[in-house]
Image 1 (cartoon, rainbow, N blue to C red):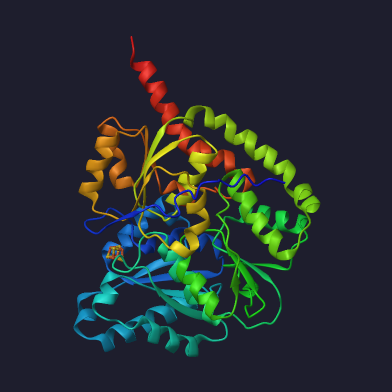
Image 2 (image 1 turned 30 degrees about the vertical axis):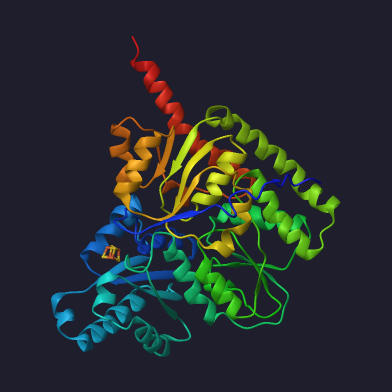
Length: 426
Ligand code: SF4
């Protein structure tokens, strides 16, 4: 079987423009929106201000009416006056919450900019509450503050916080790491099962009772590019990472599965038998959108750390021409297989100075711009065609069956623009 690896080094040795300045990104609190749906017996309690509560309400949209398992303990002025009071108040609120919601088995105390600035020690608070509420509830803490985290880094901080508490094991299990929608997780498990790979455990698990154990014989593989701290925490527990591109698109999924197959000694015949049919479906589904995307130029503003794998997918499977690929943070060790695949040409940028980046964007005038919600409408009003990056974390986009939908997220704005332009003509 040929894996169609490039002969050139791709972007492995390409220079990276590093910028610091004003940036337009979400803070890590937004991760709660998808994490609380994944972990069905967890509650996320943000310790923050009204700003944090408003952010969650607007990011969660209609979900806030469905008794979601997240909330904000709002720091009042009197909490700022004395930290002892703030701790007592937090203990009281948590006690009340857990009494009202006995279904909660995992509680995350999520730090914010205000809790960090006043140096409220949530790690100590979590320890204290663990003693109080064990064994029914396990209390963790991590920071989702805008000072420390950008958007998807909130998931990384959350998962990394869970790793030290995972039970120890000597079993040779495979851990698949990253919060996937349930339907996608099931597809992933079915593919691995068809390859004869197992036992497979997920981090995070749907319920606290199914959390994986970890130890020196564990192998793990990431499904998302933004999980650098989680990977480091698993390394510290002795687990070994399987390096691979990320499972976006037909090629990314195949290479991801192939990396596992190589470690587990899956024969080429068995691999082909497990993947041939879904690969063909994925190729066909992507081709339907590649007709719209092929030859179009692409500019990605930094948002989720998914930009490099997405640019690789859009360039190699959809024929797009990336001009600039921005990422909030470039984790070189995790990104090496992706950089090797990304065709030479685009400027790689890490961090952001938004005005300078907007100038570069304007000068290049790309056909499609991938950016956050704050930039999308202003750029549309200037005549650019944009794709909101946030949809990429809320929509199922991993593995073969979603490859067509992933391409569709990018072709849709171009099609809409073409329809509107055609409609505007007399
Ligand atoms: S954590 Fe910081 S950046 Fe995020 S909503 Fe709260 S104050 Fe704003």
